[in-house]
Length: 144
Image 1 (cartoon, rainbow, N blue to C red):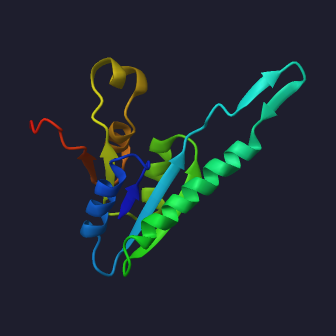
Image 2 (image 1 turned 120 degrees about the horizontal axis):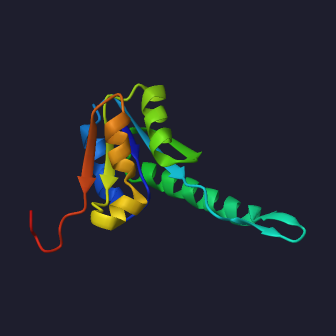
């Protein structure tokens, strides 16, 4: 079972589904992808990279992944932190781990927001070599 997480408000729900759907003796692979951030900029003297900022972001992500494991004692977890474009990394991780299912969140963007931002979940659904279960945040109005 592969469970990509983004540490949004949806993460706990997605992880709960992933853990519940993992066979008792199975392993849940929890993956977080750090997207490339504009933490560098050009100056008159060349490029400047904020390596301290990058290190803090990585450390925080690793801490959150470890906390995720701690919340589910008795289950077997593998955690991964990768950097790059999320969809291809998620698809690659599913292949490498032989995932039978990917459980991931979708923020349910529509219209122009979807057109400009795209959807990681939609790209994974289209290109993954295994089934993908997408989990949406419940509608606060209770509509279906």
